[in-house]
Image (cartoon, rainbow, N blue to C red):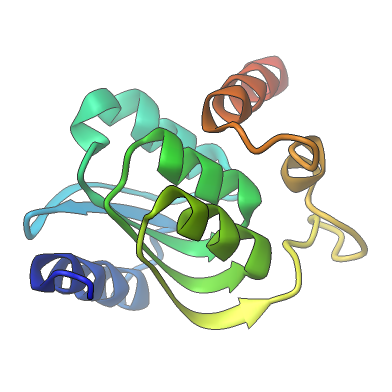
Length: 146
């Protein structure tokens, strides 16, 4: 059974994602810690950089949750995740970590910008299940892109 306070924060995250153009929202004990907009994995990475250990115990709301985002939620020690759309792989990552997850729609995979294949961040992490390794790979890649 999922605790009521977790459900309340998930509902708050859902409301914020539905009413705004945010890509990511971090909610903890009813308070919004941060909201980010943007594409791909960048908004959740920005939230992790901004909040650090303050993300521990929070609810992360993400418009689209793939394996990369799910591993970052585990890395952040979130206590719950809500997403409008999520892949089975992402939900499996959360289940294995014991993190309650909620989604409105299951999707087969996260598409790349062209819409003709797998997202490059998802592709990078096909062979890893380590949240720490995923964070290091994604951080290095984003630093190289910028």
